[in-house]
Amino acid sequence: MKSAYELAMERLSKQTPATKLTAEQKKQIAELESRYKAKIAEREISLTDSINAAADQGNGEEIAKLKELLAHEKRKLAEELEEKKEGVRQGKR
Image 1 (tube, one colour):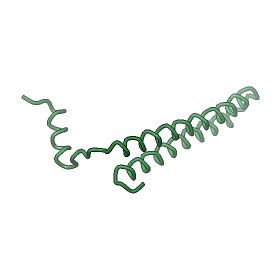
Image 2 (cartoon, rainbow, N blue to C red):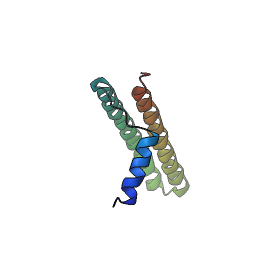
Image 3 (spheres, rainbow, N blue to C red):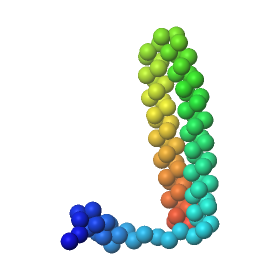
Image 4 (cartoon, helix red, strand yellow):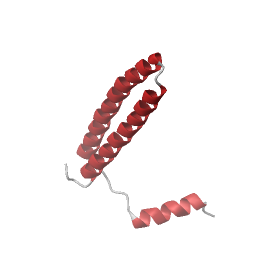
């Protein structure tokens, strides 16, 4: 008897069959992931420094704004990465 997970995975694979990536596509995706990981780290370092400076000044409102900005930028970069990866998968890069 199959588990609910196995049944769901079968249904999913019927709806959207898995595509095989070429070695070049895998390489491009790995490069994109590396590049975006670096961009995210750069923004984290920059904004963490600003957050720490605001904390030293006791500015709670500024800390909250900077943390929200950091979360927003991380989401934005993650979305950009997924769009570019999908473009590679579709052969548009």
